[in-house]
Length: 73
Image 1 (tube, one colour):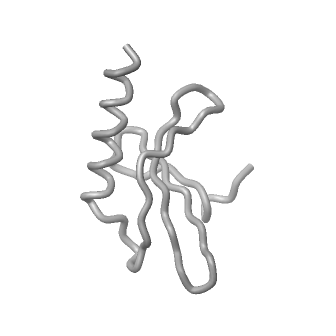
Image 2: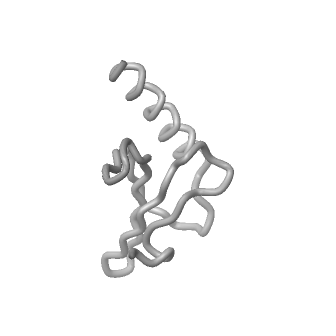
């Protein structure tokens, strides 16, 4: 089990998950999605300065998920 503080599903998204990593005073976020039960595909990463995840980063993750499945099929 990974605490919600470090790994959570973003509300209002189409199954986009956020991984949080803190290194010193810097906080980094990785966005991605579940491809199969135990596989997570990471789509993008950014340094986060505010509490809210930027909408453009969420849209980028959703677009890359769509492209991933289009290429896979």
